[in-house]
Length: 470
Image (tube, rainbow, N blue to C red):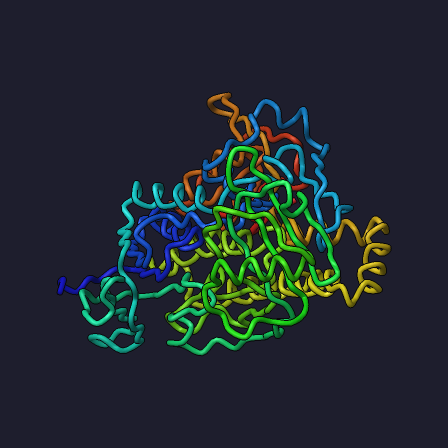
């Protein structure tokens, strides 16, 4: 058994959401240890759609390129647009400011997990793969409230190999979160009405059609791969599955046959996973020293990658706040405010995915027709588009070009935020400073393009406007 470890934060679960939080905390010089059952990155076919708000976050940490500072004034006020589906049917147009990376991008979940893990390790996070948390206990240790997590080898659950104590424990450990069971997290739930199985398969001439395909019993979705196996999903709306066990190949083929009405030509089947339209979000994502993010906090019908995106945004918004609390630079109730904000976001995501599931049900075509008609109304369409892309969350500052008065050099807000520090921007020397001096805050005075509606602004490390003076 290894000697007990003491850190600032322990994270249980190392998918992309947990790995991203580890990277964000380590960037802020927080001692963090992450426990992950899997020994390698999860290569199963999962979410691969990254939406506008998440892409902006990724650019603000340098995971993907941001707009060149010199180009920002030239493109300001214009938008990028791309078509997308809503409830399996085309007709939704997603947009993003031209200063931002894109309205949407295809980045595999495995690619994101690997990138976040690399960054976390580079910043000094202790990432332990092949170990599983077995118990999470909050108790008083030497007069201080701490969280104690006992873990063991993933291959031998009977033998404890270590214990870690921390100020806070974050559960990024999925829908059946162990961390959630250690605390009190009220939930809002919507029961499942259907069953779906996804996998990788090689499709022959008799395989399911490409793209989204409605049938009498449900839907299929097929992303063809001309040189190998593609992602193939069968969505059966005749009712939920009797259990949640890992599906077998024969069950997968039975489901595909039931949905299509004929046996599909699918071979080389692997990486099978099951999902449904079950929805749940925690109305509180913080309980004392315990916090939940990602699927541990909200789970829903996986349409359009909204789960992955909401989880990444959980991490981007929590990381710097939790670091400040741990370091004594912000009050503990900062985490309660974060919890309220993120629970509200999760409620919106669960709500729109439940709606989409009902629209996709072959027995509810009247609802589908009514919603498609409503989406032709511009204001309704734009509201749903912003919901899907995550841009309904107010206060995010679109990228700006900033030319420093002293050096004459031009940079961008996105590049300034890559350090993980908050940024204070002032358009002139006589513009007021916001609050007391903060050694963690980066301050710059200079010309800003496009011209903002404020003279001074304090922008948080995740890119949101905290304070401003006109």
